[in-house]
Image (cartoon, rainbow, N blue to C red; front, side):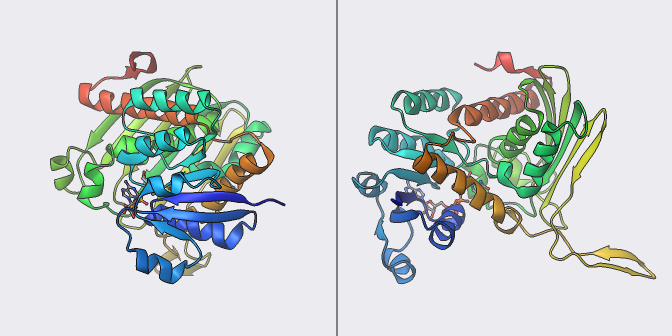
Length: 336
Ligand SMILES: NC(=O)c1ccc[n+]([C@@H]2O[C@H](COP(=O)([O-])OP(=O)(O)OC[C@H]3O[C@@H](n4cnc5c(N)ncnc54)[C@H](O)[C@@H]3O)[C@@H](O)[C@H]2O)c1
């Protein structure tokens, strides 16, 4: 079978995960080229000597045999990378979000559609095996009509302040995954967003113009709710839990732990901490999302996460930020 030729832009935390997954797990993929503006070429070549490497994204996007581009550069550069890839007629997998500007996000999604280019967003949590199972159970009617989705999503620690400054803020950078997850579990659209935000972890976050703690209520079009709590720092690790409550029951997905031992002694009942961060907690989901992207390229399978999904989550993030700023619930229809 013909292999799919892929190039990766950005070889930082997430770029390395995708590159290593493709090399180890996808025999149908050929990683033709990688570009990273800062990564030392000799260091790259030491580990991946058969892959063409450049500091310039344009050098790899223009390679004729490259069919698809995987964008893992910082958020502020996604729009330029998407535009370059669309103009070159390459299919795109882009890490979230598409862009911090709603207008630009909308334009890029339209541009990709008009050019017949597939654009998939990296909402990897949809491909976590436990979350997929939860959704399957919801769709099979196991817990009846869904009334409330509760998402707890807390990072184990603050990212560097420079990252925060360029991230678009907690809602756009972090909670955007949870906004997408709420839509994915509910299978409905959001009508209203009410968010509150605080700086409790480190006051330098406020100097960077952001918050580190947030509570959001989403009201869906039929009046049902999602409640999301976010923190940039949970002292006990990466806290990722979901509870879905319906009129016939409830589904809970608890944290994945370092091991499954439960030790009971005179002081109490103890178990291991949650997995450390996204690299290990969501390892399976990164493989799952890439498998779907490759299927979409090789077999013309439908994309499981589209540019429109990226746009909808971005609209919710913009509404959440506005809600905190104005101290009131914001209707999605207010976000232009
Ligand atoms: N889906 C997820 O779970 C997940 C997790 C982490 C990050 N992300 C997203 O992935 C993106 C990258 O995040 P990260 O944590 O890997 O960042 P990072 O800083 O670790 O890596 C970014 C890499 O891109 C390179 N780079 C910067 N500008 C470039 C340019 N113009 N051209 C080529 N290379 C360039 C940098 O040198 C760096 O190596 C962000 O948009 C972030 O929101 C998603």
